[in-house]
Image 1: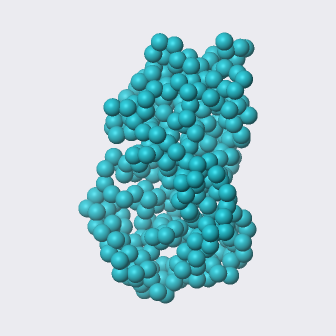
Image 2 (image 1 turned 180 degrees about the vertical axis):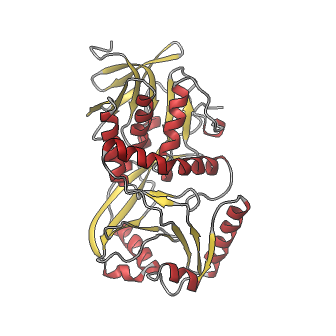
Image 3 (image 1 turned 45 degrees about the vertical axis):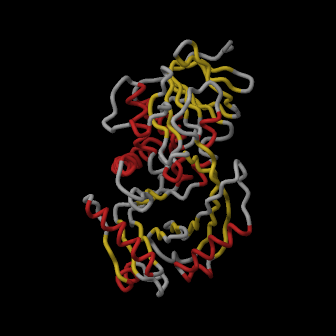
Length: 371
């Protein structure tokens, strides 16, 4: 039995940026929405992210995943503006671009190859030699070989984005139920009817699974195309006054994300150790060594904070996005390193499906159902 909870149009499992963005669009489409979260909105992977909108810098080649990333990147400026207008909270959207830096001839060849396929696809990328790269960003190491500059890859502040989305959902009439550990979904016949927590059952006409690394551990799900497991990533936050540089810097061992106020994020490790979010000396050593190698001046930066988050890593490398074989059940998870980037397109896709429409994008590569 499902107790005294009202039947909701949509219940969303997970209140990170993906879940909140889906709720925002569904509320705007006229649905009643409740989000279930075991802690606080945006407190898990969303708040631990770096916020790079790396449709080019994060993607290794052409194909449906690139198309999904590009579609979401195109949506982001208006998405960020709309959230700011509704919530009154700036999401820290910055457009300075991303520099992918090569430190040796091997990395230089990789960067040149990446630039070529992007140019073949009509994407903007500038190939810079050492002098050009250091003219654009003087703080870079003088030992670099060259760099690719991606002017259309931008960044946001994930913590601000999480706060702004949660505030937007609340203003639009969405409901949050915190402290609920979801155990599974209830299915009758071929239709989802409820979400089962530890001690309560929440009835729903539609259910969206947006629980990140926890998403495929739920009871009652049909066989899925792929599993999603947690991959830990440690991040170091430092500060320089005045700000040392403007552009996101990508190396082949990590990344550096400057904020306008002088804070800088250094990341990240990639560790397969279950749901353990420990910050380790070895992890911090790898990250800080990478950062100082790319930007030597960071050796004098002031340490502010460290943390670790759990990326939802799909076994086959592609997110679970779309309708389930079970009627009324939808998946929006497995975004791995690109959850922030893919937030707006995921929300559009889920809202279109729940509304009975057909998304413009081909979702077959991201289908949740096992073939």
